Image 1 (cartoon, helix red, strand yellow):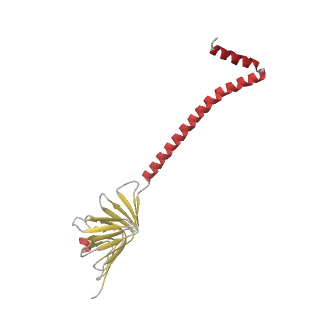
Image 2: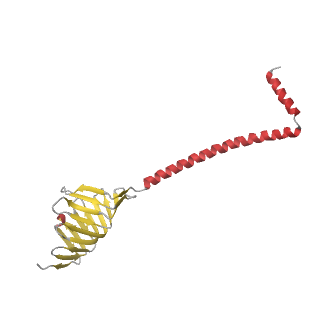
Image 3: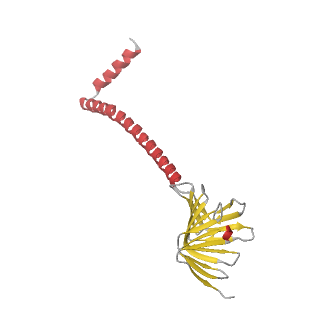
Length: 210
């Protein structure tokens, strides 16, 4: 008689020797384990798949949030030269890339200095600015103040500066003060590094006597 047959007979004898109640309970446990163990394995695999998927989604969301977050700079400074080689600098307390247009830089309290190092430098300050890197145009808004080496100054609320040419155009009321007197107008244009200013619309001037 082979060992396999003997083993089977031994298990059969042991089973026959067990009480019927215990044998039934043992059979039920075995059947239950046959059902529960595969389900547990499936559940563990499903849970692992869910955890892996959730981690991947979180990583994608974090990457998307980082990509959508605008680049912010504290106390930035931009340097450049106009078409005639005159240097200018553009600084601000804070700057950020526009989320909708990457070429647009949003500036808080910008300061523009034109003709830096030249005989006739000028400075413009404002509450807010938008600098277009592709066209090099700077839009200034809010409490704009300007002055130059000629002791001339002006105040307005909106101005467009072409850093390529150094020209300044304004479509809002202007109040200007020079050594010759005060001038006010609804619009203005500044050319030739401030040597030529054109006042347009409702111009009022008060000249000083020498």
